[in-house]
Image (cartoon, rainbow, N blue to C red; front, side, top):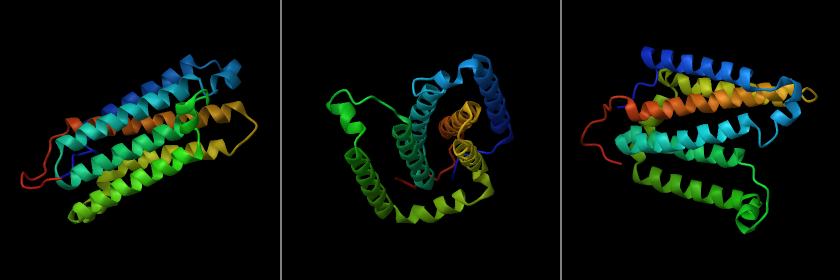
Length: 201
């Protein structure tokens, strides 16, 4: 029903890619100038946007390729990635569009649209909710909990004010989390689909 997000070959490849990300972060970061490096226009901030945008697209495509509860889960993850994307997106308010994106009104409109979309989707496919929740709270979903743990650990370093290196660790951990989600999004596309043909979304 759901793609295998925890197969040994996929997890091994993902861990190797995560390690390469870590090495890349350490080699390209100027630790003597962390205040500038960790700015909103810094490499890690931009990488986070790239990872989140690609993850949103990947999960959406994975959802289109899936059926039933697997489609609901993948589409939900795509929406979540876009929410994260706009949370991380920083833009100077220099015009009507940028002013709107930076406004509280945008956050409210975003929330209303997401809630309305979710309510309609769940209402139309309420029989998918239980299988999705069963998957989410199963051990098969542990890679998603890994991504959540990386974000949570990054938040811990964010609370440690005063050291630029703590900010680097926060941004690096968030980047690794979003890259993990990107890998999982790609997996939703490439993994063999096991949903029954009779299920539709």
